[in-house]
Amino acid sequence: MPPEVTTPGSGEFPTDLRLAVLGGTGPQGRGLVRRFAMAGLDVIVGSRSAERAAGVAAEISESTGRSVSGADNLSAAEAGDIVLVVVPWDGHGELLQELAPALAGKVVVDCVNPLGFDKQGAFALEVPDGSATEQAAAILTESTVVGAFHNLSAVLLDDPEGKPLDTDVLVLGDEREATDLVQALADTIPGVRGVFGGRRRNARQVEALTANLISANRRYKAHTGIRISDV
Amino acid sequence: MPPEVTTPGSGEFPTDLRLAVLGGTGPQGRGLVRRFAMAGLDVIVGSRSAERAAGVAAEISESTGRSVSGADNLSAAEAGDIVLVVVPWDGHGELLQELAPALAGKVVVDCVNPLGFDKQGAFALEVPDGSATEQAAAILTESTVVGAFHNLSAVLLDDPEGKPLDTDVLVLGDEREATDLVQALADTIPGVRGVFGGRRRNARQVEALTANLISANRRYKAHTGIRISDV
View 1 (tube, each protein chain N blue to C red):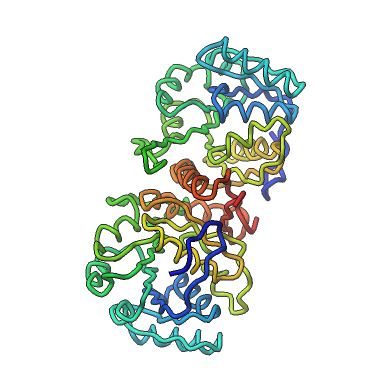
View 2: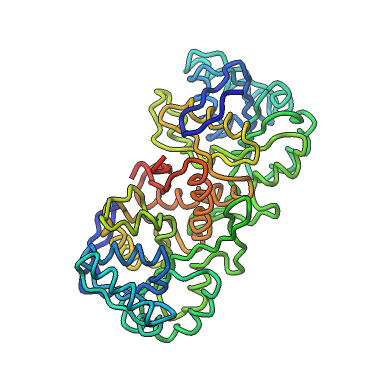
């Protein structure tokens, strides 16, 4: 574990840890896989379909010149030291129930935004547990659950040239070692800082804020992100 | 009304409109009054107590060299062309019920964050209508309700030297003319841009995000704000 992070951007991510990205074949997951591979981290892509995972892994490997592997979500969850959950909200709970034994003892980073869409745009869905992060924590009682990577543009993440992003990642969790680690993971993406954003009980609004960014994207034809000022 | 705002920071606020700031004697309200007075706008401070309102108005007048007046909340609501609601969440609904006739036909800007505090810090309260902004809209059926000014540091706002803030204001509403106007109002504060953040149904998470900023403030000993990147 790295030393305690006292200012944003001051942590260092231990490169001997293996990352698994569940749902790594979706736009957001794929973008994160790309960026972590470009940062020289050891990444395994997880997907419902092992074939699809292998396909994306091969594409990212070729595009980045880094070795990335692919597997079904269960095998990826077993292989990862830190496991990112970037799956659709629909099915999130069921998948985590299934994977709970494989995720025990690990840091699990929930990146899921429970959003709905209609003709007026995006809106936040009601979540009985409060947020996707809290749902994950309720199910994965043997894991350390952190919420992060909610508000990044999938388009900007998946840029083959790896252009810096100009955005911060709010990291939410109740265990300091784990939030420090995930902040340091966010810091590996150029132009991104991991910023502590509070406990899991405050994850809901960070997940939901993606609906506001989507509204701003529509209005301004942009790929908006958030920066935290004065830190 | 100013022309349509197509990029953040492009609007101009019509200086012939009178602003009323209800709850203008609290830290946030007082800071907004100060900044709007410094911007040369016509501002009236509202408070439950007309005496307290007059006291703050006198202080801000002396400190800024601008004429600011004070009155009880009802008289201020009657006097204002645009009315900002910066009162405590506790009592928000009751006050707006009382003032509804005075606020009919006006743009009302709800700036209230329904937050709770315990030994673990700040957290978002459940709001039956979804958010303070939506509660205001449900009560003030004859007004045009916009949500804005949720995430600004009261300390930085109330700076007598008027130092620029380095933060954006997310503006939420369903009526374009009104959100454009409130964006232009936000633009009058140095270092601040009004940025469209979606419809009122997406106000909840912007109000609640203040709990995350408070968490970051504690961790980093800062007065954090948010910036929207790529616009």
